[in-house]
Length: 600
Image 1 (tube, rainbow, N blue to C red):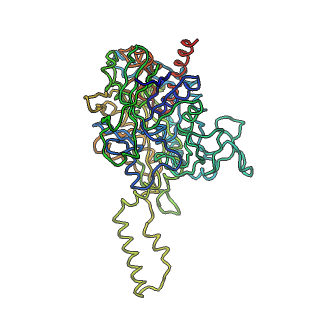
Image 2: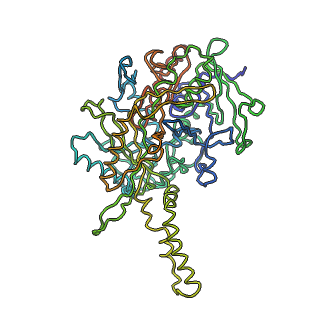
Image 3: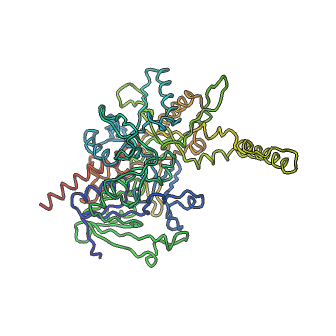
């Protein structure tokens, strides 16, 4: 038995776990945060192909990278391993769940979701998250941000669609981003202040690209960060530290409050303590320096000696797949857990699609329209489509359509897919070069010829990904066969929702003289790829409805909490990170109040 005992042990450092770590440590609790992945300071995210190839998580195969990919029959998901969890690869969006989307369906009469909390319950916690994540809107009115083609195209599409159909409940929304476009101090007094879009009468210092960020205290990594350099690499990990990821915000704050933060520590088992109070947690310590690139049996206790600690409260924040998986694997220690474990899984209405071959008229000619998805952060704004729950008629289930971006690395890959054209242009260049070498051509200036090898780059410059998320039906079920996690969610029940999404995104494409294209996985297999899996250990009013109460405390097991996306009883609608954080912040208040009651 370990002699290490904590007031709270937190498993996972995503938007649930990081919030918990800071709030509980701030309140004076002794906190240990266990994260299976590595820490990623600025300039540690790989870019070289051979390094990206190894940037996946599967320690049994010697992989200790960031991406953890799941693929089931009807859905696939990309989640993250690393200090900061999903914030390392998310697209920075900090947005509140729509008030009327906290639906309360009658589950006894065929309903699928019941939210035991309301927007009013979460608003004070949303406010805290806003402040902690230092959100900023994309400064589209300022140079050079005002030349972000994909943002301007989406704003234009929204205006056209609304003009064509005034009854359509569609609005363009500039989103709050957890990205530093400006530092706290004005280092360039020659640049004018700009109006604060959220607070009339207030001004902000002028945003500057690539400026060192002046922080009030050292960040977790002790490294200099820089304001956004507009490179479109958010989802690959931000090497300049411009993203206000959880390691720079909540985890840094937790560290300054003396939380014990342990990386490369993967929890394998837990159980109620033999004393009847609290929990025993067993984890293994990964060693990439020793095992990276090598197959290793992580169940071999000689190679990976188990580490054990105890706690009064155990908070599972391992994510929508991780937390249910752990509960299933350790269910024998928790025989009274609700039969709802695994239920109400959904994909938050996610759909990746593409706007391609955009064009415009210039000087009487139809030419490719530049969308340049690699300029700017991955997402800058959204078109919100109304929901029947908004009370404006039978519109169907609502969603947000967001401009997508991709790194220039992917743009090069897109251009190389036009291999036949590239080969033809290269052959033309080679002929010119040979003509020069044998004296048939006297012109030694090859600049234009080399430029022509790349062609007009129409494919990459006039296309962009589009990210949609909203309210699919949470009728999926996670299960465990003793070895593998399974998921039976399929799009069929949500077919009407996805038909509406595809119809609207097609209209958006046409509004900017472009074409619509499904992603291949959806087009071929009807598999929905999501970055926002939710549910599986959802909150409810009682154990017949969910695994835990609205504070995330598991029914029948005092002190055992869930604080991540698996707790959601249905889709959030927009990007769910802020709601997960706010729910966790509310639960932290509950735990702190309990702790104060016990210690007083």
